[in-house]
Amino acid sequence: MATQSLELPDELIALFASPEEAATQAKEALVWELLRHERISQGKAAHLLGVDRWHMLDLMARHQVPSGPADAQEMRRELEEVAILHQKLQPGARTK
Image (spheres, rainbow, N blue to C red):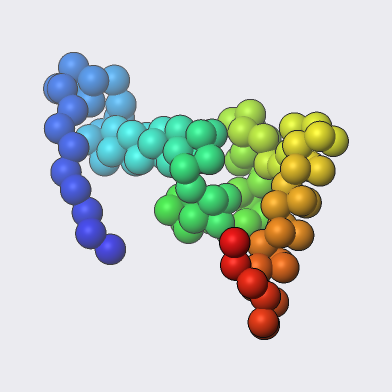
């Protein structure tokens, strides 16, 4: 896995117990933001945070990140998308 460095001002790092804690908190904040905006999956977020999927669901509740469709209409849309994808993946299916 490639890594990048991020420079944080000393005054920001001083708010934490150590530079390592500041780095950990920055990484976690980035993962939560990406997950909230659906830029990464729950599985990817769990991997990046080093937790299993069940612990991830608990953390998502604690961080107020939705873990599924917001309402019945959104659920119907997701099911329709899955059905379309399923049809496209069937052997011999024509792609549009």
